[in-house]
Every structure is written in structure tokens, then in C-alpha cells.
Length: 134
Length: 134
DNA sequence: ACTAAAACCGACAATATTAGTCGGTTTTTA
DNA sequence: TAAAAACCGACTAATATTGTCGGTTTTAGT
Image 1: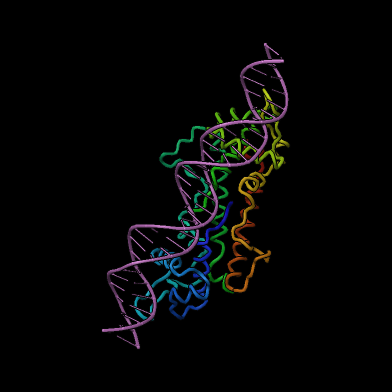
Image 2: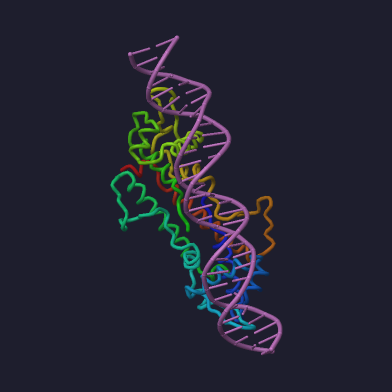
């Protein structure tokens, strides 16, 4: 079944939360409570988002996280790709190493999957965090 | 990682195979060999396609499978949805039973996922089997 | 009528991925 | 100096995917 992982769903909700309170620093505890996301899991998700510079952190008491840039500069696609890893519908989409497309029919379908992949990515990139919060 | 299951990839390739040889009946063994798909697994995939009337079968010696309708009448989306089950990016997309959207922010993101889901489905429906084989 | 080739079927097993947990260490503010 | 928070890596549990197996039924050809 094709679906978006809870990781991405949680991640997007966390980002939307941060976007809604741009002036303040929010702790994992706070986000976790208001968005009803398991604390320890959210920690891992947030950590990924921080490592790819979508958000920044402040350690210690009163610490927490905040967006690294303006919500209008953050496309949803960026968030999803950080969390899901790259969106690759089928392996070996265009002649990478280890990719032996000997069968012509196989490659017929591959170029189709590639189209779908592109269309998915551009759909994800068509909106920014700012678009979501209003 | 967002990806298309091998089930759908195999299924699409099998359908493309059948579309390429419209006049003849192809056995699982034949398709399995020419497309390099595990026989037993392909059997299960084919069985699903048959139950949803995308293909038809003939039992016994010289039996096999063939498309139930013209390739131009079969959208790739139909094939994928049969094999993947419905494409539901997130549970509870719009007020189904058991869906308690108490949080406004949560639903903000849900309507976004709904958009992505729709766009994915229409991308899958934009091409037919016939489009693929030429 | 018999045999072999095929569809048809349901249960099982192996593997991979996702989702979540846990026990710590480090940093910083009050 | 104590508490709150980020930060980190290893682990476990649950679920989904991928594939296997052992059969039964149907049918064409001999």
C-alpha cells in the first residue's frame, strides 16, 4: 500500500508547529505534547531535520528548536525528502552503476516510473510551509 | 523511503508483456521467464489482476492469460491500485469513521497530503498501457 | 481414459522497513 | 549545582513486503 510514513507526517506537523510560533524556541517536549507525537521518536525526527539545516537548536535549559529560515523559503518537498531519504520509486532509474537494463520492456516501464517520480516531487515542492499555515 | 513495491513493478511489466502480444495467450511460466520475475510470486500478482477483471484466464494445457480489454482502455493507475490496494497517503483523509480530527494543525497537513494523493493518482491515470508499448 | 501443462488456492517463511524505546552524555540557564 | 533540555547510539517490537511451498482443479492432446 502506497503511503506516507508517520515519520514524514510527524515531521511535517512539527515543522508546521514551529512555523506557527516563529518568534519562540520550542522544546521537543512541548511539540510532542501539543502534537501528540511520541517524545523519543520525535527526537530522532527533529534530529534529522536539524542535521539538514532546516531547523536550528539551542541547548540547555530553555533550549529547543526553531526554523532556520522563513516558512516561505521551506518547501514541503525538502522536509519529506530529508525524512524519507530520496524519493526513488524504482531502483536504477537512469543508468546508474549496477544498473543493467538489458530488457527493453523493463526500461519502458522505468521511464514511466521516472515520470511519476518527477510529478510527485514537483507536487511536494509546489507548496511551502507558509502556504500551509494560512 | 518512498518507493513502488516490486509487486507493482512486476505487475506492470507483466501487463506490458500481455499488451505486446494481444493475439496470444501467455502462461505464467512464459511471462516469468521473459520478464525474469519469480514464478510463484508472479502467480499471486496475476491472480489479483484477474480477480479485478483486468485480465482473463484459460485453464488447462495451452492455457494462460490475456488482457480483458484493449490496452488503450487500461490506465496504469488501475493496475497499480489493484496491486497496492488503494493509495491512501495518510489514514483518515476526510472524516471517515474513527477519524477524530480534533487538532486543527493536524488537519492542515491532512488536506495537503490529500492534494499529493490526488496528484499522484492523476499522474498514474494519465497514461494507458497502449501509451507504454510504443 | 490418461498424462502433462497449466490455472488456482491457502498457508507458511524470510527479509526489510517502520516505528518506537531506552539509557545514557553534554550543554546551559537559573 | 541542579534541572531541563539537546544529543547520541544501540536496541526492540510491530508490520509489510517478498517470496516459497504443497497441494487441487481444469483441460488439451495422445
